Image (cartoon, rainbow over all chains, first blue to last red; front, side, top):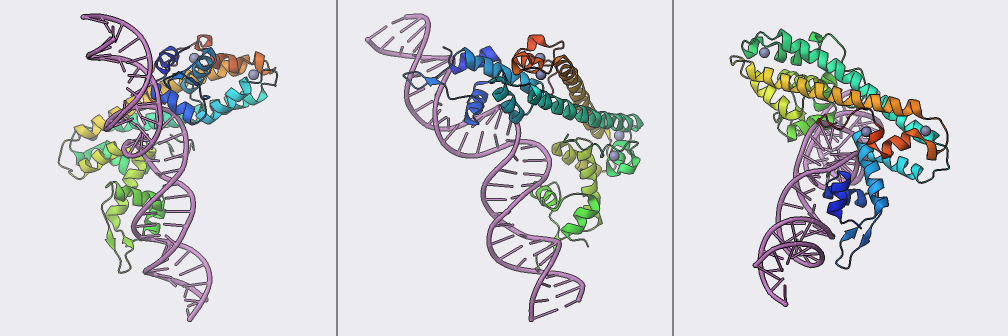
Length: 144
Length: 144
DNA sequence: GTAAGGTCTCTAGTAGCTATAGCTTCAAGA
DNA sequence: TCTTGAAGCTATAGCTACTAGAGACCTTAC
Ligand SMILES: [Zn+2]
Ligand SMILES: [Zn+2]
Ligand SMILES: [Zn+2]
Ligand SMILES: [Zn+2]
């Protein structure tokens, strides 16, 4: 049995985060010791490691919740899991596209700056007016 | 003079967002009409357009605050503005690197799924254990 | 005059944690 | 056995950048 601190160390997750996951019912309430401290077994560690890895891959907690309940039913078809993963891939691709456009504009404005006064600064100038931009970085709809 | 609604339409910013910017002192308090409604002039529109464009390019509000106070002093050197822009570029590059790693892993796990049961699903399997991953998507430290 | 729609303030909610305060419990050394 | 320091407990507030509502007030057009 692991205390919350050991569990956190084992899974690479901070202690307050574990308590937060319990609060939002992503982790089940664990046993308690005689002194009211949380005690975890292997299954909690597995579950937490799953959550951590999915978070590292950018899945939102709601998606992780769905993935976890799927993985509790091993005989079901995995189609739903694949849909979630594909959705996540789509979101990641959209963000990359958006960020690439931002990167291009930032590089352009930085390159064009002549290191003079603010009045002549290309960075300030471009920020003041999107028509100085080469790309339409506003279009890709993903939240940045 | 523009009411808040017209200003929002002119700058492409929602009305509650304008009030929020005023609250955090990113926009100055405007004049009021006899009936206590906000009235804006051209300078407010310029300022708001600047904020909107900088937000679209991913700058955080704190950086925008600094950029705005710089642009109020046109005779100063623009070095500080360039530092902010470069910092933003660095952040964007880091995020792109992170997201490219995520994208690669997501594509890998999706491609390897055989569309069977959850027990055999490669998506679930990879999420359970980072050692199935090809890349070290955890390393790049930028907040995703 | 009246009706619609814009505006006012204030509060609370979103995601995913993180930090603090003030307390109790546990484990190890003297 | 006693003590001390680390680790645990609950509860609350804060972070970014907004967004959504409630209930009241103002403005404009017909
Ligand atoms: Zn410059
Ligand atoms: Zn632009
Ligand atoms: Zn599958
Ligand atoms: Zn991995």
